[in-house]
Length: 114
Length: 116
Image (cartoon, rainbow over all chains, first blue to last red; front, top):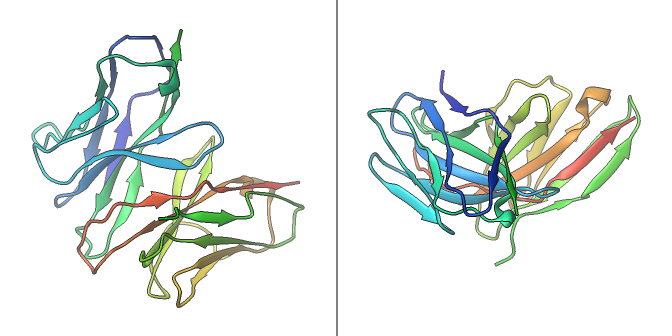
């Protein structure tokens, strides 16, 4: 079945450090890929998405490229801030079945220290 | 445009009781999905409704049920509550024009349920 695998957290970085959170997926068909962010006590917010191979999603300094050859969608940011501390979820939207449903990774907690 | 709203935000119940949670999607969105989030199991898909019909269902017992109204608002119900039902319940809506279409889900703030 379809699945999403994220790197284990927590990830602890100093402010202005480079961030990479790895995400790989297994899917039949051609899923769309997403990164969501969850701040403490809140729901999930869409961070960025990519709908086909080689697409790059970007938002608020975060980027991720849909790599079909490596089935990956790694999240990167060049310089993190304390305000980026949150839990990040990678997800895919499975459309092979005709309808769709989302499959989420387990989430990666990021802590940025001042 | 208003976002997805969920009520109530917090709820405390005791074992054996039942609970109903409500979700109002973004205006114009016709698909509503429900998820359970716990520290141990992460985000788990409960079910998805579109045009008042359940289209997808996750692996949850029959105590978990839902429905969608003609205005796309959705409710989920959990009967005979167990301690393990304590979780954050998230609702997400999307436009979804038809089958096979990829549409982004937008999440509400969640309802935090505590079962004592």
